[in-house]
Image (cartoon, rainbow, N blue to C red; front, side, top):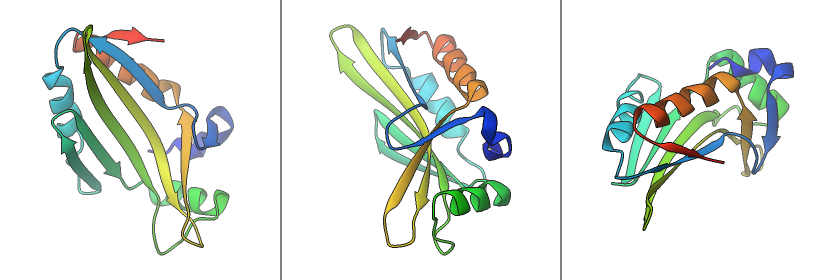
Length: 140
């Protein structure tokens, strides 16, 4: 994702912040999990199925975005940043609450890791559409 190319238009923060959305589903949204998993099959992607209800997709950013993240957040050139997308469903009496988050994980010099969160309107719209297509009701 070349999100950093338009950095002035993208709100970025380290730690908690933008990049999180949730929706309520009447039943477990298996097609949503399958769609996210199938979208994480590229050469630069790594899919981790944490459990039936949770998955993690890690994608290497473009070289330009990686360089910008490394420079801006004191990153370690030996351990490249990754774009992390998570999807987790939690069952309750009302159905399943599904939460998705996306952020850059930037390993820093000295061993710390910065989670760089950003609000990207195009990504947020895509997630809302995916939730709606799978039968979810957005949670504010």
